[in-house]
Image 1: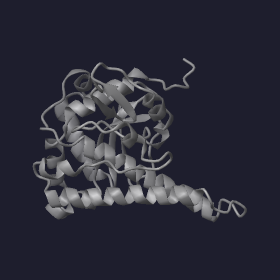
Image 2: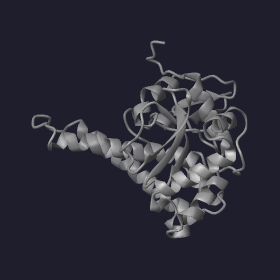
Image 3: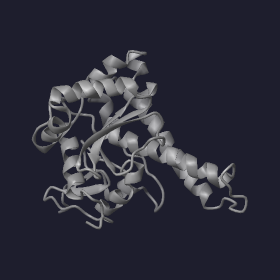
Image 4: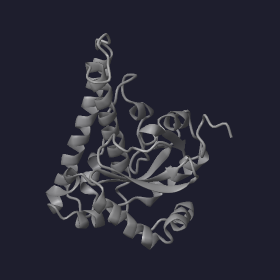
Length: 260
């Protein structure tokens, strides 16, 4: 009988607490906001789904069940958002395919096809990754976190209530994403705002709470009232998923290449 499992970042964790080789993959990809995929709050994803279908390709995760599970975020809003995410998956695969055959002869730092493909590859990749973190930290009942996650928030922000105020303020301030993560450089929680997927994406940050504040995330339901959307986001957070992300992140506080 196969062990029940779920994805925490790029890690696969069984109920027995065994972490597979995907640990190494995530730590190596932290420069792109800790690499790839995330804790899933519903049915466990298959092992192949974490990395893609064929080797080197992306495969969209199935988030359709979220459409009917969220309070304050309509099915229409979520379905439209998922379609946008699937577009990033398709573009990531298209770019990776083109990079295999692109003419390398004219490569230079002003303009070359290979340069443009590499830059846009990072944009599409992070568009995939951050959306998967985002969808997977939804589906809960909100409330407040407990255990080590709560302690970490209190250490950094003074109290859970102050963190919530901070998260809302960050959500109103960012143009694209808010990333609350575990900073492996200092061994504590930290937060960053991104205006684009691949601009200001911090290295050595393992995402814990990922908040999408692009207009596409809320305008169907709330128009330009981002504040109401932020309330809905917080009310649908799955703290158990976020807590598991922290547990895996702290297991490797210095990364696999640390010298001590």
